[in-house]
Length: 95
Ligand code: SF4
Image (cartoon, rainbow, N blue to C red; front, side):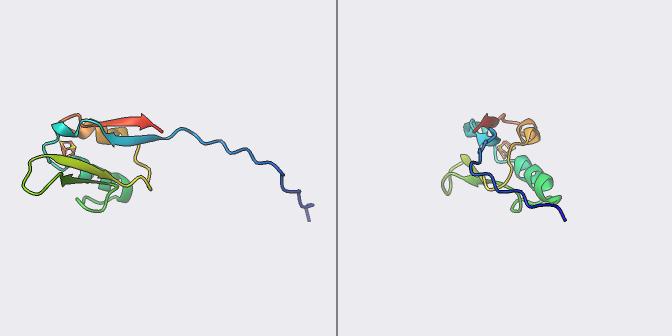
């Protein structure tokens, strides 16, 4: 039986810079939903407007402007989402 190693008194926490998805140009959004479908496909293997880490919602009822609601509790740094958007609405940002 191997001897137990003492726990280190000091732990060094290295937080890697994560790339996250940001809707930096949502004024270009036409509400097509392609990003929602791809986010759902990437994260869960399904095509759904509601199951992914990204949802597109109207800024206000009756207005033709949209906002991205992103669940940052999940991995979001997928360049594919940036690439599929016809309005070039997204960037990957280091955080
Ligand atoms: S893919 Fe781009 S244009 Fe289409 S809903 Fe998403 S953010 Fe808007």
